[in-house]
Amino acid sequence: MYELTGVTRRYIRGKGVVDALAGVDLTIAAGDYLVIKGPTGGGKSTLLQMLGGLDRPTSGSVLLDGVDLAKLSEARLTRLRSEKIGFVFQSFNLIPTLTAQENVETALVPLGVKPKERRERAAEALTSVGLGERLGHVPSELSGGQQQRVAIARALVKKPRVLLADEPTGNLDESTRDEIMDVLRARCKEDGLTFIMVTHDSHLAEHAPRAVTLRKGTLSSS
Image (cartoon, rainbow, N blue to C red; front, side, top):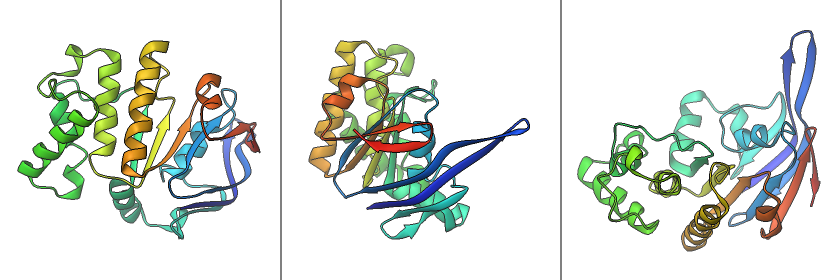
């Protein structure tokens, strides 16, 4: 699935240079459930962006199914993200004027899915995360946990192979956090997805089958 070799991401800040990632090597097999933990500013989100093809390394390679993401054109990279990778973020990133169903449908537009099929698949995805009766509600009519469920349905509706989650429960209370994690784990297991999550929550890391720590751009096993 993923093979990262010597991945470095360097930023110029003022007159200095900062290595957000400093020679990261990481292998992630298909179907893995991996948590990336570590302090704020340690490079966790940068690493997730590399895995999602949202950023390119300064040096090193990020292979997904043998394809080096850093060497793809922007058009091919965009297509790959649309087809293979689902994203869930701390901020739900829902369009406030669209209903839950319409928000989920937006993930299918770049894939050229016809309107009737988009509606059916969006409704099915929302039902799978427990929101079958909330299809017509706009985000302001939903709780934080429900909005995150919409975001999860939007990530899953295109049937990706990988689900990347960046602090997906960071804006939720503990009870809602546990509910959302139950949904994520259940959906990933049922769909056979590779699930990679960034979190600073030690509770979530402790309950993951595999966890690594990223500190000052350097990766270590947990």
